Every structure is written in C-alpha cells, then in structure tokens.
Image (cartoon, rainbow, N blue to C red; front, side):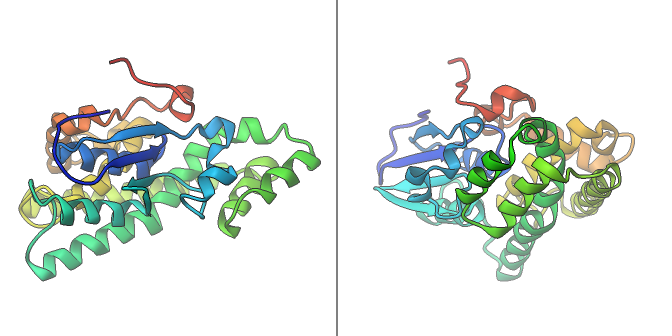
Length: 259
C-alpha cells in the first residue's frame, strides 16, 4: 500500500481488514496521502495473540503503526500522531473546545460503540469457531490473551454466547450513535465543528457496520442529515482506498485486495 513519495519516517501498518480500529488508521493514512507499507495480521490464525505481535502491541489488538521501528498503538492516538506529524491536510480542529469535543467523541466511540459492534462481529465470525474448542484448547487460547477483558469475551464466544437480548441492546447503542451523528450533522455538517476531521473518521467504521446490520438506521428516510454526510464520506478517495470491505470471512484473514 503506497500512495505518494512523501518524505519522513518509514511507516509500517500492522492491521486487519475487519478491525474497526485498523479501518480508522487506514482512512487517516490515505487522507494524508502517506507512503506506508502494510502487513496483514491474520485474525483467523490468532496472529494478534502471538508473541511476535505482542512485542509491537502488548494488548494483543490491532492495529500497530511502526514509525522508524517504534510501535505506536491505540487508533485515536495514532491518528493524532499522524495529524501532528503531517499537518496537511489538517484533520483536527484548531479551536481548543472543538479539539476537546473531537477527543470526547473518539472516547465515546471506543468506550461505548466498539463493545456494541464487537458483540455482533464476534458472534458472526468467532463464536462458530470457538464453540468447537475443547476445554484444553480453550485454556490454551485464553493463556495467550494478555488482557482480562479480551479473555472474558473469548470465554463467552466459546461457552456463553451473547443472547438475542444482548445483541438487540448492542444495536440500540448503535441507533443512539446514529441519533447523535444526525444531531451533529444537522448543526454543522460534520461530527465536530464545520470541517471533516478525525471525529468523522472515528465514526465511519461503526456507521458502515450499522448500515450492514440495520440499513434503515443509516437511511435518508430515517436520518436525512447523517445519510447525506455518509454518502459524502463513502465518496472520498481515502475511504475507497482504505478498503472498507463487506463484512465477510476474507476480512478476518490474510486476504489482500486486488490491485
């Protein structure tokens, strides 16, 4: 994956196609027109739990961005680093209050919307796999996971899957996210302030999954302002270059898009 010959430190992105956080960073890199190499972390093979990857990101989650050999983690922080280091085009507000709002929005997405999306994503892809594990294999898999929260989620995938009620409650969180986006877009045209920013990028992977899970929630019929904003985002070259592929099995693997 390369887009320009812009000077600066070498950038290597370790990512997964299905990962919402990876999608955020890919969008930012392409908005900046940066040259970077990319290595797909195969989630089907649990490469994110391997020792070599945990040296890059001790939490065992994607993405990680190597900058001249130094790993950066946490997608919101990676994107702020990119905007600070490569300020053109700008993707953060200059007004301190709007910058604070952008960061609060990113935290809301990660703290509230990410767990909601994960319930659906993991039940779709990982539950059918994990439920077949023996107790011994489950223990081996759990031992490789570095965080208690992720251990708990993997245990649930194997032995205590999310209920229909939990999945519907997760959808309610995404509906609320869309209500918030609609209200913000109606006022200024963007999630934070009157310009496209990292706040819009933070939302995009969650909006596309909401659209796939419940298309009416992203429709012009239900949320006209958000629908217009969403159509404009999907038309951006960086969005297309970031490969927000349909949510299917290839997105979890080492698949590479056609060139």
